[in-house]
Image 1: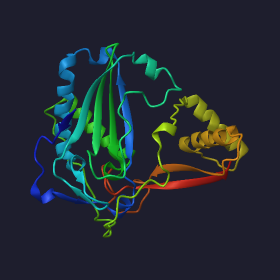
Image 2: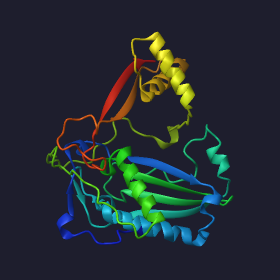
Image 3: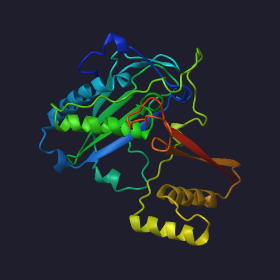
Length: 294
């Protein structure tokens, strides 16, 4: 394991980063991502140089996203102390096809995805480079949901990391961190908030479902024909189908269940000026909650 620090030290004027009220009340859970690259896409880079190649570009990226290389002090504050991200390199004794062609597989065994929550210790970003026996690789990450923000925020970090990997001399536009300017945090000296639903690693099941465009269009047509909803979105029809199947498949009375749908509201608010997509620390989303008795 290597600790990757920003390539340039964070100025003393930026050492303290206050979270917004929304981020303050979010539990310190981690978002997992994994990206697969077959052998022919990485063969041009010697295997023994790949880790250093990615580590250098990650270091440059963290200079722009300096709060994410810091330390979460409490529910309100990030100390931008250049603590850095943790980066692992491992060998996996299996073929990449065994993972990506198995839709019933849980999150790939051996790929970093589970990171402890409800603690202020440790890195806010953990990455792992995994080498498969076939020559392919996987790049997996855990990113703090409380600090990094939502998937849109993570996307821009990953995009910038990828661009700096392709072109180390590229000059990036610094991301905009709203901090607590739009929704100030409140003093709170207690422990970090825990998730409303505890995540138990041994009971976690993840499934992958692939919907083609034609199937999604067919679902939309079915909804329009059989309901009063005239313009259902892709998210609505797929989520409704999955929830319907989940409730129908249950043969026991498990009581009240809940479906949570995070929605990106960045372009749906009346804030002036509108928030840019890299507003990482003032999370602009809402949760729709659906309840039913199974």
